Amino acid sequence: MLDLKTKVTGIVSQKADIETSSDDYAKRFSGKVGEYFLSVQGKITLDLLKPWHKAKVLDVGGGHAQLAVPLVNNGFDVTIVGSDESCRTRLDKFLQPKSFEYLTCNLLNLPFDDNSFDIVISFRLLTHEDNWKLQISELCRVAKHSVIIDYPDIRSFNIFYDILFNIKKKFEGNTRTYRNFSRKEVIEEFDKNNFIKPVFKPEFFLPMVIHKAIKNVTILKAIEKLFSILGFTKLFGSPVILRVAAKEVSNTAVI
Image (tube, rainbow, N blue to C red; front, side, top):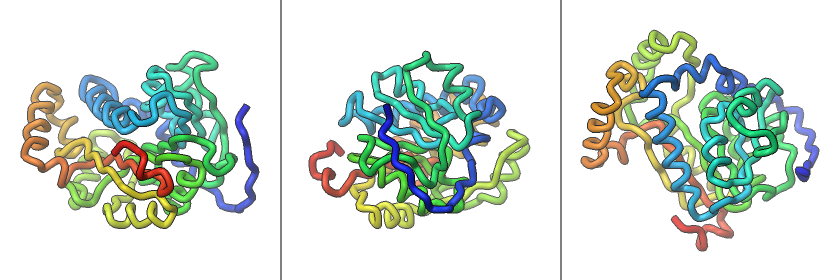
């Protein structure tokens, strides 16, 4: 049984994960290009989790199942929380019963004791949450060792957000506005919550909408490999997967 802790804050999350947990949202990652996106995301995340093999992981807003599936398949003890009961639909579709735990709750008021999970992850969420600082605080509160998130970095093609958003909307139709972050502001917020030693792993150099326009995965892999070799992806890539370590255990974590 989960060790639950009731907190009363009066703060309501924006339930941004309802859309990302839907089949309609999953269509953005359909086809060979979509599979390529998810394979890169999954590989980076699993690599960052290597120091804690088969650890107890909380996936906040993970009803999209993009990471819950590879985590369960790789032996991790996975709990997913969503802001609505509908957020478990895709999880039930792709995971075996009893292979994971799911709980509906306020994502800004997680019903767990401090340090309840070895690792806490949250993808496709922070960029849509106005109360993102509180969200980071909650992720850190329930994490014992590490927190892993993704976010769109302003130090990338996202500097042309207005232009790219309009193009992206033509391709996807139901694209939502989203917040871009600087590395500095994200680091500072985690540091306030005693999580340090950030490891940044940008996924792609080219915007994802350009990938969808090109469509050819073989060509895309070659282009992205070239930019990676040249160092462009490390400096200007997005979205970024970020891992931070709890201050008291950061010296023993494998970075």
